[in-house]
Length: 372
Image (tube, rainbow, N blue to C red; front, top):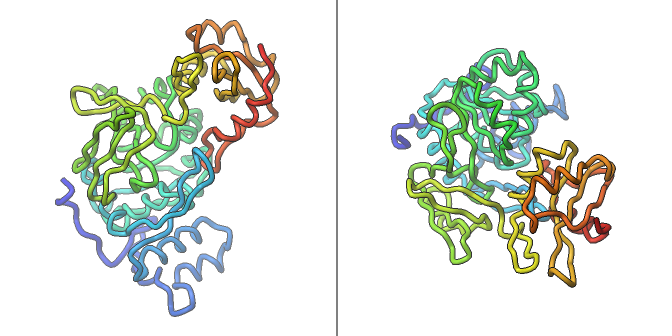
């Protein structure tokens, strides 16, 4: 499939207009025509971010700077090889069977790899890029179904909450949801979507996703299926190891505790650094949070603090007031050893720049928790 992709031309199609790539290339020390125009029309606009990236991606250097999401700490910059970014784009487009001219929604910030790779797919595979300013509901300004959509779980939830947006979204052909877990509530709502919906697995170091999991329809899957050219294995610690020569020159040992299924797919329990060792029992933060999402209606996170008795104790951090949480419902939703030993309420739950739980910040808060 990947080898059948049409090679890129000297133009990029944006909102139906064929634009020469040369317009995104710098003129000596001056910006290219498209960036200059975008800066003149709206210096703070999204088109400026797109043009800046295209200038960097189309210059003579072999790499472009990307930043990790900062899920487990401070975001880090590293140099991604442009040839491997192009290869990643071909893997996705080939797997989904898209063709030049198909529409490709850009609703992600250009600060991180997800937004950058949406643009690379259009450059590399001739898709018609449809940029909309990133927001909770990017479909507020979309009137026609899209052939390829990439959104976060938060965006998908907001889109489906609006009937008009949900109708256009539902008729879009291929929907990729990444950047966070799809909870049971969102999973249920996605079953009414008529297009193909996938959860994605990947990270900045893999230059976007390397595996997809179908979420809706009779073809829905329990595990993630690696894209063609990607192989997986487990490390001695039980974490996923990714072998993807097209996007990484060496195997990537992740921090994701995984299980490889008999059919070659895999499932992820959570991150190795999100394991709480309490009384010699290893508890996975993500698994506890998934159970509590059914009974806690305010933003929350599971964390831990040191304990002389258990080594570490489970702590429930909630945004708001302690009385916002039904502790009896919490106890009933969890196994005895999963139950929080402490509760702390905070005015604002700490999040990373990509709206994921800020685990290190939560641990700092957890150290001040009061016993239940």
